[in-house]
Structure formats: structure tokens, C-alpha cells
Amino acid sequence: MLLQPKKTKYSKHQKGKLPKLEYRSNKLQFGIVGLKALESGSISAKQIESARQAITRKIKRTGRVWIRIFPNLPVTSKPIEVRMGKGKGSVSHWVSKVGGGAILFEMDGVSEKLAFAALRTGAAKLSIKTKIIT
Image 1 (cartoon, rainbow, N blue to C red):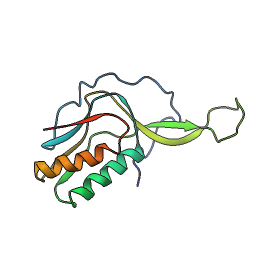
Image 2: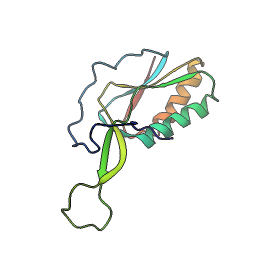
Image 3: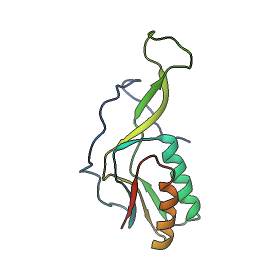
């Protein structure tokens, strides 16, 4: 089950710009250990889901994991070998724009050593540089 909005006002969006730094969601709120983005970038719903699966598998479903980002931006693409023009392509996947310093995942209820190992495996699934914080 990939993350995506149930309903949106408009089906297609423009690209926009990536945020440089995150000032609002840059501190831990729920857990004791977190995964923080060091650079800005866009993370797809597939990447978020695969990181979540890796983390929960590593901690053997004990403790609790919070996902602090949500993919709410549609990315469109045209089919292969289609000529220029003829409008914008259909929505291919959903992404979340992440600024540097944003908290991506938080954990609680497991030992710190296990949490570090789990977040390290989850970080390998993401396309941006991250850091584990306590």
C-alpha cells in the first residue's frame, strides 16, 4: 500500500522549487531516535514505503515508528516514444519535497542500538543524505 492523497483539488501540479532548509519539522516530536535529512530533495512514495518496511523488519515489529513526511505532490510523465506536445502526461507517482534538516522517521520503544541499526538500513533506501539523531 503506497502513500498517496485520497483526494486532491487538482490532479496535476507544477514542479515548483525545493525548500533549502526546514525550520518547522526539524526537531523530534514523538520518538527518542530519528532520521534527519541533511540535504533537500524529493522522496517518492515507493522509497518511503521501502524504508518503512526495512525499519519495521529490523526491529521485528516491536516499538513504534512514525513517518513524518507525506507524498502529496504528483509527478507526471508521458509514455515512452511519444512526440512533443499534446499536453501534460498522466500522473506516474507521488513525491514528498523535503528540505534539509527535516525529520523523516522517528522511533520509540526499542533499544538505542537496535534503533540506530534499523534507521541505518532505512536510510539506505532513500535518495538523499541523512543522519540519525537522538
